Image 1: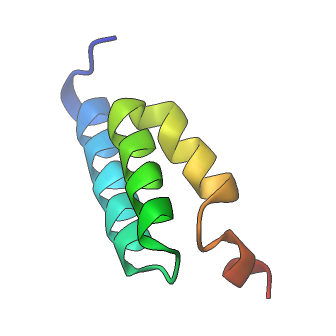
Image 2: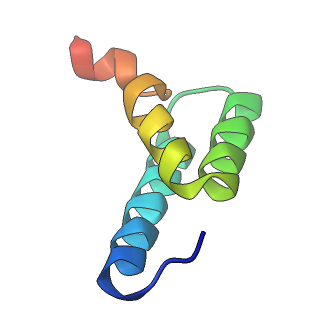
Length: 62
């Protein structure tokens, strides 16, 4: 899949935001590594999965 222009830039910014949030979360190191790899390997799908079920998802509901 090829990204171009503003769409690619938006995906890049969202993935960087996700990775920064993952690293700053209170999850274990192993979880952080797995989530980061998921976001890096599958940029769009990984971001959506992280947004729904990521390490900070429980804190947003409280």
